[in-house]
Length: 388
Image (tube, rainbow, N blue to C red; front, side, top):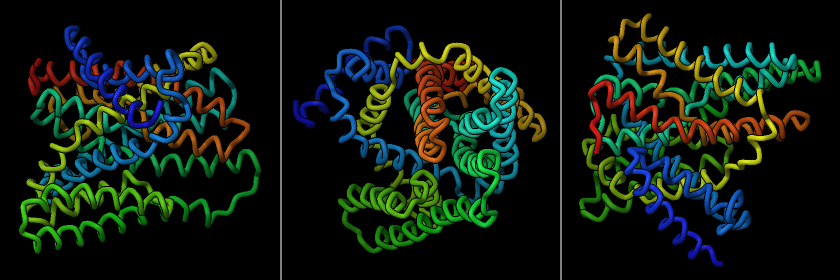
């Protein structure tokens, strides 16, 4: 089977499965994940491991588009109203996830390094699933806005917490680590991504202003997102943070920003479909059997940490009862960033790599199936979304 045929089969199967699950009131993203699981290497192997490797670039593009849209939430006029509160909430929901997961795994396994590495990855929240549910159910309101903003900031905190945890883990395993590298590596990644995104955004805004042709609104936004993702991957920056910075720059300096975001969004649904289907194809059911109680502890501890942290942060910042009670549930999905960090961990810590990767993949399987459903439920309960 060739790659193009694989894409066609993936698309059709995902549409059909999502429509079937729609009758059971499940979000489309859940259908895409299940379709990928069915046609992927874990089950029927209609699409092989080899083809899956060739299609990995689709995930990078999809995450870049999603991050670009998240950047829209960082319009300064809005950030002045919610910026400080969002930072506090995001810190608490990220930090509490790390603390609760580390404590639970350390008590159960007795392995400090393993617990530390897994806990750092636990801070990550998958923006793709949450944003897609929000778009699908046309959710609007204070809870939705807070959820989008927290998800947008979450990856920044996750990368910082992971970098710190890795530095500590390296000290514990080797007893010898350069303080300079431990500090400069996360600084390079974060600020490199930010500067790259801002510069590309300035150029994009200038070109969009100079070129009046209608076709430019169709062609240029996607072109610049692709460029941002490509540059980030080439120089070792975070593509997510780069595209968030790009989106934030456009939101703040372009007088045509809303049109740019709307045009790109209209071109994105099929890319999102393929992204989630590919994510489902990466999930290996066999992994679940090998993890047992450790996997269950991780899933429950991370959920408890996310919910508790979001509740504390919302209480401290005096958010409404709706936000306090429901925000943490909307932060459960875990996928792209977590998988990426687990892969990095596997390379840096060979002794723990396979165990960490298997645990995160098992958790992704669980969270990406129940996470979108939970997000949908709380958005509907809050009155900000309606059943289709």
